[in-house]
Length: 52
Image 1 (cartoon, rainbow, N blue to C red):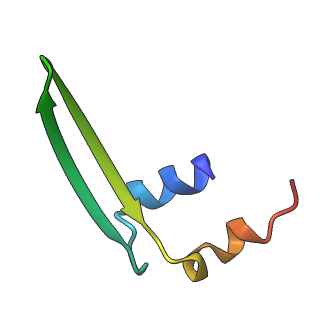
Image 2 (cartoon, rainbow, N blue to C red; image 1 turned 90 degrees about the vertical axis):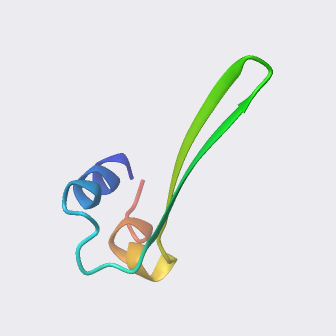
C-alpha cells in the first residue's frame, strides 16, 4: 500500500478519482497538522486483489 500511495502521489493521482484535505489544529500549546487523501475502493483494485 505504501508503495502504491507514493507512486500515485508522485504522479499527482493523475487520472484517478480522489480528494484531498489539509487541516491545522492549534490548542493546548501545540499545533497538529494533518493531510488526508481519499480514493474510492474501485480505484484500488490492483492493491485490493493482491495476496499477502
